[in-house]
Length: 325
Ligand SMILES: NC(=O)c1ccc[n+]([C@@H]2O[C@H](COP(=O)([O-])OP(=O)(O)OC[C@H]3O[C@@H](n4cnc5c(N)ncnc54)[C@H](OP(=O)(O)O)[C@@H]3O)[C@@H](O)[C@H]2O)c1
Image (cartoon, rainbow, N blue to C red; front, side, top):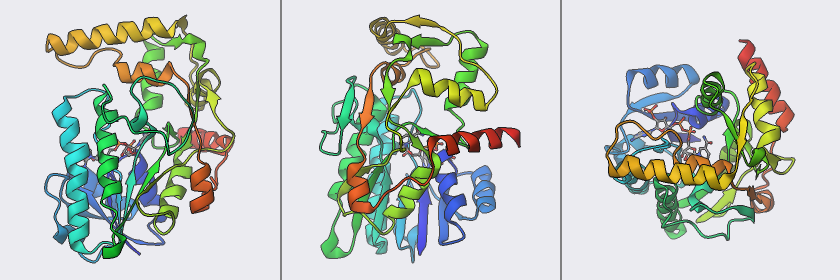
């Protein structure tokens, strides 16, 4: 199969390229010399283009597009998030359709449902947060609408959304490094004692889900893809993650309502006063760790035959092995 991937230089995309390059022919969006080199090393042929410049000609002969690129920063303007996540996705869809691509696999996120609430037992019938106060959530929600409504089986163009939650594993450049910085600066705090529960998606399980979605799953549908073993509390899971990198998480406890008020106030001040850099604790991040997020992936299991190949323990062992090299 000929696959074109966006975001192939990122955490999720590079894990996908590395895992499947031997079975498929891969081309990948690249916007720098560094990404060219990384993609070539992993097994994909880099194509110089961006989400602003993508055209059908870049996708000639491609069977499936995997769209993993997104603006996933903790902080930015509404316009920046909209340009990359919504308009970039719309451009990818138009180029793919014009090029005669048969299937479009979009990497969605549970964040597209979030506007500050807990999710308990949510499945794919739960509404997208199209008016979320968080730019990442709102723009990923609108991107998902664009993808699902572009499904056009009559013209041999199927679209599907794979939704992970809390992706972790080797290659992560964000979560463990951020916890390390907080631990080193003695700034780490347990919100509500870390008692909130979260579903998780090990990166190897996400790669398996994306590969499954190349051929399975109904067009126009979204699918949560999660780890086995149900949700975990942050108090259980974060120390397991940081132990693989050789450090402990110690910190005071603060109540969720206080953490959310501090985040709300500082974020407001940042925007109103046009301060440079980003606030110490963006609201989105605080909400993610101060509410339960418990999801169901029953639909992916039933309709796509999704069955995560890696246990959490196997993922932790892979992280320990990666830390040793
Ligand atoms: N990580 C998670 O916990 C998580 C959870 C749920 C869903 N997701 C979804 O998974 C996908 C991948 O996330 P990730 O964690 O792998 O992110 P990441 O490591 O930050 O990678 C982001 C990728 O997007 C590319 N990109 C960003 N802006 C672009 C633009 N304007 N034009 C072209 N490429 C652009 C980056 O390319 P450069 O290398 O050139 O910057 C990079 O390859 C995203 O769609 C995200 O919403 C992630």
